Amino acid sequence: MTENNVTPARLSVEFLPELPGDEWGVPDGYEWIARLAGSGWYAVGLWGTEGWNLGRWPYQIVAHIDRPALEVYGLATYTEGDVTVTVFGSREERDAETNEVAVAWWITNENGPEGLTPDMSPIPRAYSGPYRD
View 1 (tube, helix red, strand yellow):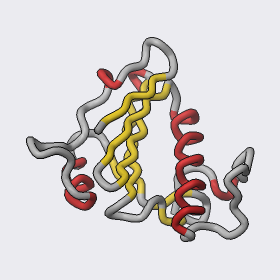
View 2 (spheres, one colour):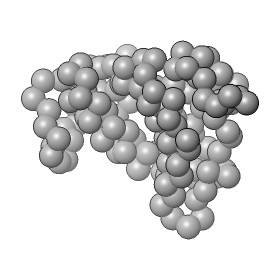
View 3 (cartoon, one colour):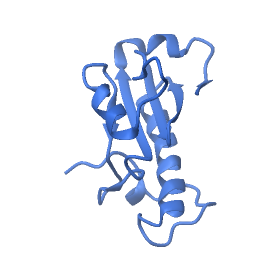
View 4 (cartoon, one colour):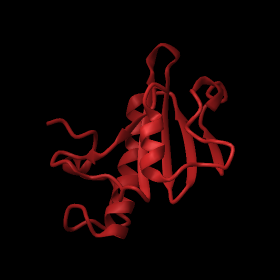
């Protein structure tokens, strides 16, 4: 199942390459990650300043795509075979939504930083943004 959440009217998943699938539906998580290669999409394994696991592979996976020439940035979440794609007009908007996904999954999976709460707003800078080693 794919759901499209589009913010400004000019943004659409039509500006993004398709995510992996096959005639039987969405492949399992590790195969889905492998099939991202060459599509422009890439799996995001670590998030925040300390590089906490983002999701619980192969059951929960985040993928991003950057199309700056079109001002289109995509976020895909894979949750046990269900894929949701959201389109944003900036990397900052996309990363802010990824922050929200990360905190929700860290709380659910109990595998992220300590002291997180579901109503945390704004999300502290230490828990935000792509991990840079």
